[in-house]
Amino acid sequence: MRGWSEQSPALAVVLGRAGSKGVPGKNAMMIAGKPCAQWTIEHALAARTVGTVVLSTDDERLMQLGEKTGIDVVRRPAELAGDGATVDAAARHAVGKWGLGADSIIVILYANVPVRPAGLIDRAVERMLETGCDSVQSYAPVGKMHPWWTARVESASGRVAPWEGEVLNHGVYRRQDLPPAFVPDGGVLVVTRRALFCEIAGVAPGPHAFFGKDRRGVVNGEGEVVDIDSRIDAVVAEAVLGRAGTRQ
Image 1 (tube, helix red, strand yellow):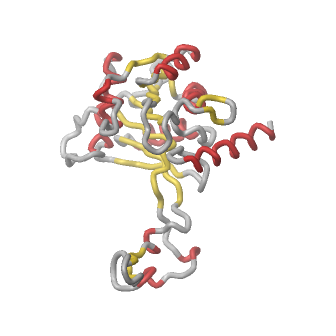
Image 2 (spheres, helix red, strand yellow):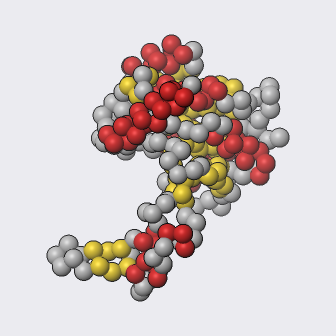
């Protein structure tokens, strides 16, 4: 196996900055009785392929939460905590002190995702181990929001035209006839250290260059991951986690 063994498991980085335009303070807000970030921390601690969990944040409340749960906490500098900060820059800063080998596995988790299916992190790490790829990201089916059903609507006249091509809806009007399409769901991102630090030759520059060249995915069911980017997402997460608690 590359980058992982029972003696040297993956390093998980939980990213949770204080600011947010959509839902201010969302990473520390209470969701189903716990701070939102705590759900992600618990997911990381429960993964058998993860040996060390690191919380990267500039939020004092989250720092206290990290210390309370016994994980490593990295104080994120201001220049990596603003709206313009990138995921990969924050992750590189968080793992810098560990001196990881090039093929070491890093699991990147967002603190605003309180709902993930059980075993998702391990599935993603195992996909990397099986394929030797540079990155693994989780995806969900797009459902009825399929790209083939995307249209342009003129603001003045209301005239409708296909987003692409000449035929509206690609001539498909039944959902079951649409080809499978998937969208990143925010559940997990796994990268090698070599990919994260953009040390793979032949990768075009860009915001996703840290995914490396060989990019793979794991698929979740529709709605199995809840990524809080709006108030309605928080309501959905409360409902899902509350229902799960009722069944226990």
